[in-house]
Image (tube, rainbow, N blue to C red; front, top):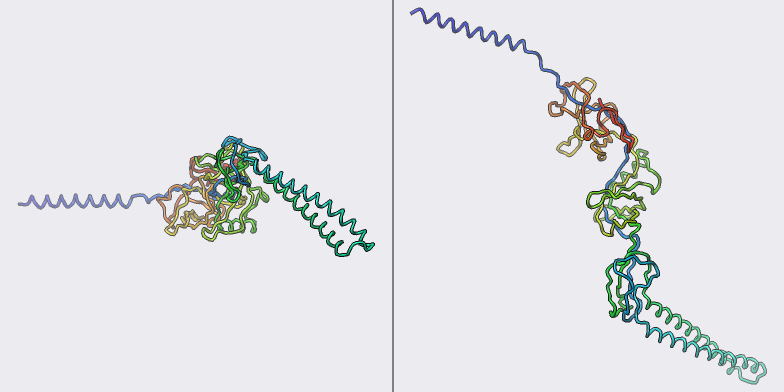
Length: 403
């Protein structure tokens, strides 16, 4: 009967011992460690300001070859799609009616010239006779008038001859410019008309070639303001470098240059046209191709580069980053970015040189937390010019730094 209380006392004692041991272990547990994050130091760099714009290619010169006289096409004297020279004959229109018209005009001119000689001689005789009162003043006036009319007939005849010669010359349809022909719109035997300006062919000069780009008026306004305020340095008037990206994603080997920016904003799209010109000796660029152009418009001397992995966007779409302060605490920053350069964001505002931006371990920290910053270890292809190690981009001279 007394055995049961002994067992109960033993069980209670064991339970109490276990509780004391557990409490002792809990009290002796070490405090949590400060999380370690990888950071990069922000420094200013000289970064080219590059704008990428869509556009289409256009021929440098375009000439539509149209009929200027009526007639039957006797021959075509070029190969479709070939290069032709300015002044080269392309078509021959039947010249027979125009040769006849020229001969008729010459005959009319000869008749008028003969009549002018006769009336001039009569007017000269009457001039002497009227002084001696041998003829009436009225007869002399009539002779002078007849001379003037004959002179007008000669002038009209000369104009008719010139017109007939011009029309005869139009039977030789020549190339107005040097360039490449397209598909012939007429064949030998076709009837063409000057009144309808029958289209015969189109010639396009594609070396060099124009590239017409579309830029929003807001981007153009910001660029001009940055230049005026000295934040950007241009490379000289009309000297901006232009690189072309073809439809297959490859870079066109030739560099272009800007020609002009249109001064009129399209009210329906809010954009302006920027025209560039490219050499095209290989005839790679054809009119109507869709391309993208990268325009190096200037240099931002005080740009700050931050790796993409250190920048996020909030619900409003604003770029944000986490910065480690001097007290070791995490603080959020709202950034103003102006684009990307390789793997980095170009930051214009929101950071200061010397700020430490967290690029590794952002998922385990939050604002206000105390952290231990260490230099971030970024791969060369991911860190680019902003990776740790003070690397320098050979293309732009932009320096990057680590923590």
